[in-house]
Amino acid sequence: MDLLIRSGIAILIITVGVGLYLALNALRLMILRRANRQRVNLGLDDFRVGAPAILYFTTPDCAPCRTIQRPALEELHSQFGDRLQIIQIDASERMDLANQWGVLSVPTTFVIDARGQPRHVNNGVASAAQLRRQLGEFAGLSVPSTPPNQAAANKLATHRT
Image (tube, rainbow, N blue to C red; front, side, top):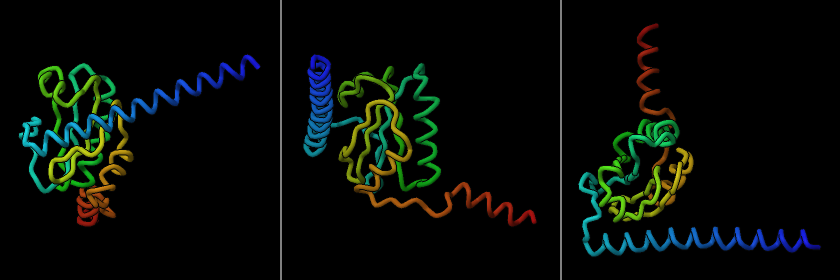
């Protein structure tokens, strides 16, 4: 019986923790959207209206950023090309932006719609599949049947034979 009570308390603590985490992320996105609507500079000087973006906070010494997150972003860039912007910010150099966006750890990615409104935040590593799903919810980006780099390789192979 004691084990059952302890397990119940542990599940309750985990549930409350996850709920608070999700609520804080939703609140952060709401604050960023409101600031964007009020034309507060969110540091997206490189953002061009009309194409969705992934805002990627990293640092030079972040191992997961180099080994996992960066390859996932490169995969998305090879699939979508210019239809998707990837804006990388070094959080150690631009602490003002990291603070403004509420970044507490790296990697952190924000998925931004074509009008510049933040739609999703990912604390920690986000897979290419997860980012693709988040983009698909609002951007209507579809993965080409043959990625651009693969299409070029196929053309090259065709010309060699």
